[in-house]
Length: 80
Image 1 (tube, rainbow, N blue to C red):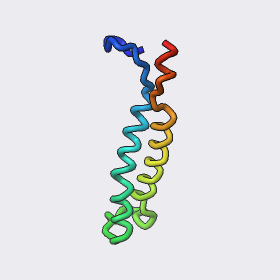
Image 2: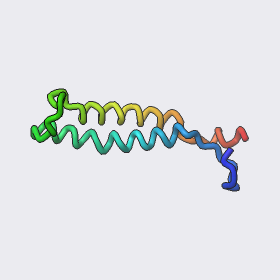
Image 3: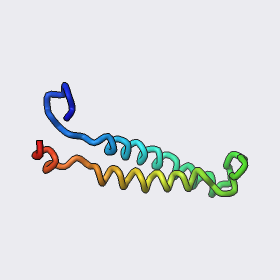
Image 4: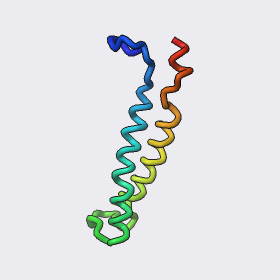
């Protein structure tokens, strides 16, 4: 239970982790796709694998899963 809010709502920390992860993925994915398409990636050791695009895709998928899985529902609030 959230102490001091006066509402008694339960929110899982994983909901906020999911939102933050999804936001990072949404930022990285289009930038990685643009960098891959234009060839303007920073020349790091493994730049030919396009890590920005793949990490953006992975973070978007995981963030979407956690956000959907731990989305606060009205029946969860009735349990308290």
